[in-house]
Amino acid sequence: MKFRAFRNLLRRDLDFGLLLLACAMLILALLHPHARLKQDTFDYLVVVDITQSMNTLDYRQKSKPVSRLAFAKQALEQGLLRLPCGSKIGLGIFTEYRSFVLLEPVEICANYHEISTTLADIDERMAWVGSSEIAKGLYSGMRTVRSLPDLPALVFVTDGQEAPPVNPHHRPVFDGKPGEAKGVIIGAGGLVPMPIPKFDPDGRPLGYWRTDEVLQTDLYSLGRSTSVKGEKMVETEKAPIESLGATPGSEHLSSLREPYLMQLAKETGLAYRRLGSPADLIAALKDHALAQQQTVSADLAWIPALLALFCLVGVYGIPAGYRSTSVLSSPV
Image (cartoon, rainbow, N blue to C red):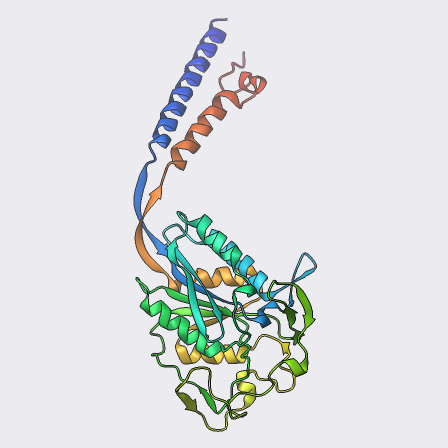
């Protein structure tokens, strides 16, 4: 009997001690302790191609066809959740021959709602013309990141389809230095040519683009001027038209122009990755080569909060029957 009374008293003292410790840990958690830690963070301007070929349905999710644009946006949404706090993301769009900033890079944890909402609102109706001059849009994006504070890296998401096609012997000039801007080109789309959906200005489907509705030849060969007056062109010798992904007679169909994008990446000093799954984009966003190590304030409140939970489980979460047969029980 004496031992049982001692055991009960010891158990009450232990429970009381655990409750006191839980209270102390909860108070500490409410004080939001922080620590200054060094970690890899990232600073990006993500430019998304919103031209009409990005509406091509050559991705699948849950057995349903998904457009390149929708798939890229979903992958970016998942990527936001995988980047560490302290990282920054800005958003832009590409159409015609220019990249435009919608949201300059902001810290992702404090501004997640704003970034996510802006990303969700990006769609093909933002485009004002039907042309898609990929190289010029990429060069425009690189100039843009060089003009922004902290020089963010560029993430340029596109299928690489130039519309109208580019003459392989007369290409737009890259006016920067390779590697001057960091970043990665993300190639969206499949390798099998697919029809390009057509929509009216309100986004209602109108079928697919036909052969006679799409320019099958580059403007230079047709004797027309370039999109920018007085634009300089680089002349190359015997460059095969296939090197730019052009498919004369089939430009109303669309596929990922991967060799062309890889060529642009090499010429500009950017990396290249194909968007096969969201994991591919997440890996590109977390590439150590694009990381910036900086000191950030880490919230440590979860540590005392977790300790408080363990203490409360020790007091209230262990069944009475088990406690009575614990190591405190007498074998006599």
